[in-house]
Amino acid sequence: MSNKPVLYYAPRSAPCRAVLLTAAALNIELDLRTVNVKAGEHLTPEFLKLNPQHTIPVLDDNGTAVSDSHVICSYLADKYAGVNDSLYPKDPVKRRTVDARLFYDCGHLFPRVRFIVEPVIYFGVAEVPEDRITYMQKAYDGLEHCLTTAPYLAGSELTIADLCSVSSVSTAAAFAPIDAEKYPKLSEWLQRLQALPYYKENNQEGLDMLVNLVKGLLAERKA
Ligand SMILES: N[C@@H](CCC(=O)N[C@@H](CS)C(=O)NCC(=O)O)C(=O)O
Image (cartoon, rainbow, N blue to C red; front, side):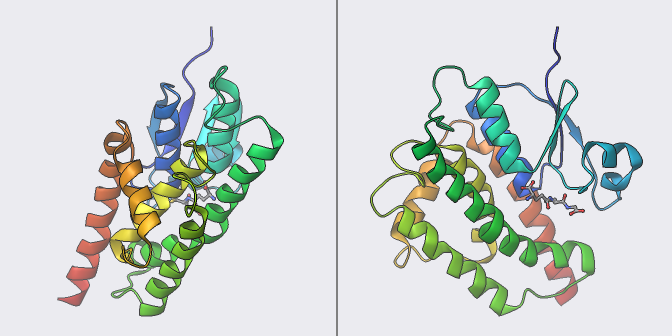
């Protein structure tokens, strides 16, 4: 008998929240184990055996270790979605669009988010430089164009690209507001994702914890 897949994660982390959203969309129960990055729990020999790159999230699916949130989400969808493959289509033509959107999150969205929040959490920074906010907002443009003719990033159906991107975008928006006049489609998309029945529990709660932490540290240091 196989056990529930174990997810090593932190509720505040955007990539971890992407996996929680995907698991909820697929109706998969995970065995959640928190990892405290600030305390160095991701650098223990046991954790390094699971993921030598020492990032969270990491999934341990009955002995199969999977790292990187985008890879975990595609793995979960491939393995557990059953006949309805809309979250991560098997058709190579459809899948390539989803993959391109996932890589945009991995290469553009999340790195810009992390350069806003991580220096505050880990390096005692007292202010987010204006150019980081502007640089974050610049990445909204690529999303707006994806959404010109479709409600979701890869077309007419919700995919893991939306779930991975929304964890980054919702975090970004707390620090680099989305101008609804400039990015109307992106603003609507965010509201569409926020209306998912599993969004609050699997993204909003951890997001609120992160935003309160970062804004609290910034306010303390400004005082
Ligand atoms: N591309 C990775 C990024 C994961 C990542 O950088 N996670 C952060 C926490 S939000 C982390 O583990 N930081 C610790 C480290 O990089 O050593 C993913 O999507 O999983």
